[in-house]
Image 1: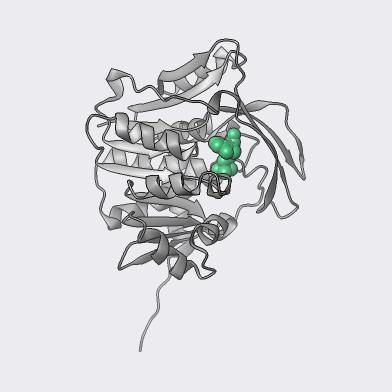
Image 2: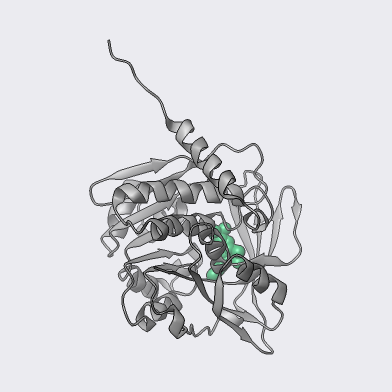
Length: 308
Ligand code: AMP
């Protein structure tokens, strides 16, 4: 059993009401792999960085047991750069800069040692790259999960995005993106339209208001943990996705019932992510901290009704 994650490996510059970061490590692939590494020591990352990327950041991922053989380092080129500014509510943000750099013509190479992957997490990247990764795997993984963002729903990319959505099992997006992709305001109608594009399951993330998991017949709701301090939401969606697929891969169970638990594990991982700038908090979590957080989710929604 192994888990293949693809996505951006980036430099981010983040502004929140609490301060501004320098260029720090970020990227969808980074957050996914870091989160998944708490569930399986078989996490393999595919991505691309420029010559300016720091070896110490790759070392940090390797220390987490992440295989970075599939991360290409492009000589003389620059790493993908993203900069964003959060509004006072921390639920909405403006993208200030997206410099694709090495991501612009990224040709994902899948090392032979990655070909055994059973769980594939397609993190935020160009839809063409996401599709190429599926096509380059000799055997279709047991489960393919796709995360994307509004950037790829623009005119130039939308048909490619719809095509790759048709090739996956689970799509994970936020409420604003679900509305944009479906043209429906109601999330229930949006879910039906998106699942009609191919995936059997859809996750709609609602930031501090939790997440919804849809199948044809069922809907599950997971709250977000009310946190005293939210410092920086960057990467929360990717961290959620890494925790979600990490739990499924480690339990080898892709039933809807287990996906419900996976949504809770993903939400717990995301709750840690937002407590510090960038992926900092994901570097040194303990298994006890994670289990403690999952218990907080259980306690949060547990109640009994007595009928006389
Ligand atoms: P999230 O907060 O979960 O939406 O993810 C934020 C991460 O996505 C940041 O670390 C960025 O580097 C990365 N990111 C932002 N825009 C893009 C894009 N267009 N393609 C790939 N990754 C991106």
